[in-house]
Image 1 (cartoon, one colour):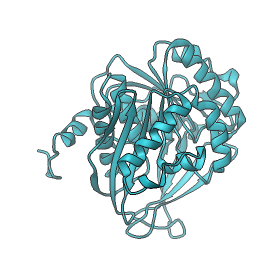
Image 2: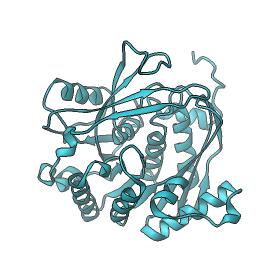
Image 3: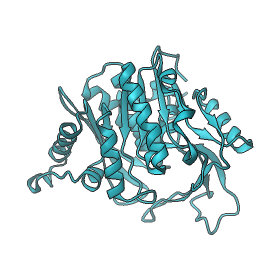
Image 4: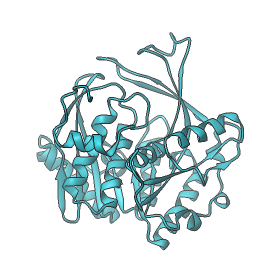
Length: 342
C-alpha cells in the first residue's frame, strides 16, 4: 500500500458476500465456495486505498457476524468503515461462475431483502460524512435497489454540491437488477448532480437513447467521442469516461478507455489481456479516473492510468484491484513482459 495523500473519497453502495466455485466449476458442480466481500463502490475504494487515498465505504450491513466479517474484510485492505451503519437481517450474496474460452462468466444474485434495501435518509448525516473530503462516488447498482436508496443518494449528492465535493457515477447497468427504462428514468434524475460520469456506449443507448450517427459505426474513437459529448451536453458533466472492450472469448480480451473533458478527448492504448477474473475491472477503471482527476491530471494522463489499472485487475481473482501505484506506473512505462520481479 502506498503512503497516504491528503485526498479523501467517500463511496456509497451495497456490500455483498461473493461466493465462487473453485477452478472454473459451475455452481451445480461445486461442493465448496471461496468467500470474499465486494460491492461496486467498495471495489473503487479498495483501489484508491492502494493508491494512498483515504477511501471510505458507506453502506448498511446486518448487526451480526457476517456483517462484521464484511467490515473486517474492508478494513484489511485499508478501506475506512467509519460511516457504515448496522441493521437489517442479511447481507446480499452474489455467486460468480468464472467463464473460460467460449463460456462466459455468469453472476447469480441473491440480494433481495438485504440490509441496504431498508436504509432511510435519517441514518446518514451527509454533511458530516463529506466534511473534509474531496470526492463522492456511487454506481447505478445502488439506485437499482429501491426508492429509499435513491432518496439517500439524492441527499448525498445535494450535500456534496453544497460543500463543494466532486461527485461521480458509474452507470454500471445490470439487467438482472432493473429494466433499462427504469434505470434511465432514475439515473437521469441523478445525473444533473454528477460531475464525472462513467458510461459505456451500450448503456448510453439503452438508458438514455443516445446513439452516434450511422456513419460513425466503424470508427470506435469517433463513435465514443460523439456519445461522450452528447452525455456531457445533456447532463452538464465536466467529464465522461468510457471503457472500450473487444474480444472473442471469456479468456482473451482487448481493453482500452476514453475520457472526454472540456479540454478535449483522451484515448488510452489498447491492452491484449489473458483474463483471470474480469469482475471489478470497470471499478478499477473508475478508481483510476478518480485518482488522476483528483490530482489534476490531463484527460490523456487520466485515461492512460485508468486503463492500465483496469488491465492489471483482469489478472487478479476477486473484485478488488490489489495493485500498487508503482505497479500501474511500471505497466505504463512499458511493463516487464510478465517476468518475475526479484
